[in-house]
Image (cartoon, rainbow, N blue to C red; front, side, top):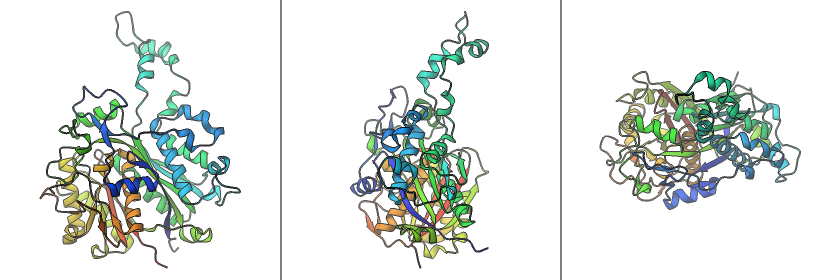
Length: 445
């Protein structure tokens, strides 16, 4: 059976530099930083005290009034996903249950709910530590030690009955599909920073094989919490030299980089079967033509020094697209700012693309937004799509002196005018070893 063609018709971005494509694109061109000293909690006892925070986000602005009571069981990660879904469906010109009930469009829906699916990447959602600590304090024995027996008999009763529903990774997709009435196949992928690319790739396959006509896909996560910060600190991945100048902290591929910066945010895309999109007169950003994935078996926490796993994912994606390195006009790097990972990524791209890896303009976004884990890849894919739409590649923040070990053509100093017909975008999990790559192409008849 001939594979169906899949296009991108909507982008939803919720990031530290803006909400929605217009705000984010304007901020990128202006070189605006989304990194500041962490204010969501006191970071003073951590070695890294900076992060990418979303200034104002009220989930009630993105759901129907009838659904607002459910906001009480939404962790920050879920709120970000729900907001991104609203932005994506609206950007795509969809008439979903949410937008109709909010009175923003007139019904009936212009999509069939049973052919509308979802694939959303999620991370390790941090529990509400104050609420949990309060309950734990009621499970202390006469010696002041925690008692599992007392916790089972008394302590657990001090948590709300629906407490766990705020922290299950599948709840991002759960709320999004309920709000927008998406009844086709739904899936959750939890593979750290590779989650979004894997989720988009799975949605691409779902539509291509005919199991759905339209999918909302991508990822979201908030690492702006003590546990998110502590995990990365213990693994030695964070920037610690720029606490006094947060906007300079994340420096992908730069010679002076010293680590990544935690962040929060996400992106959801609307993927659609080409003829389905054309029938409803949708604006088409780009076509998804290739997807590849791989696993790094070198180490669960460290990249392969030559980037072989990333190279395999990128090579698979290009083969799937039926394209060669000579046809790639833009590399969407992951560029975490972690020294060893940046070197591995650059070498992996060189393995996949040959000498072209040093010539093709490269997009690096983490200097703007930081690394928010499961949602980071979708933000990158959405920005690469915008580069294709505007024939412009924003200049990377904080990339002043390129590390000789990372010989990529990172766009620096000012935005570059580039006719982008084909974009290769990659992502890798800082822990776990997953790698993924997607190939986007300007739509041809």
